[in-house]
Image 1 (cartoon, rainbow, N blue to C red):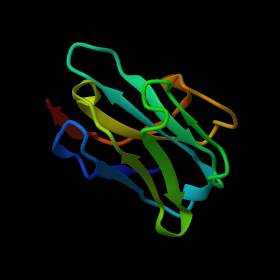
Image 2: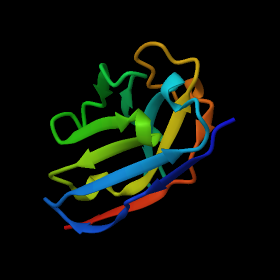
Image 3: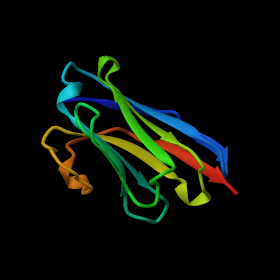
Length: 125
């Protein structure tokens, strides 16, 4: 079992930046592929980004490609999501997820076993 706690959300103007962090409990963080998802009001939760165990492979949804960067620090049990050039349509609750059985590009949330509580990101126009 792993517990995930996100932080770094907030209110930002369009064009601004935020850096989300997700800290995992336990000693097995490096065994999990990690993902970021988001859910806007009235919409289903959607894939944002994924990073492999070593950090050597990253994947992005087309909507965020070139603007968001995922990274991880296994020594700190932390995965990050650097979000630049934010748009009002990026407004959502952002969740991190851990996938102990994820070994390739996995955008389906069903592939992830553990979830954080989410952090709100609001982008004003």
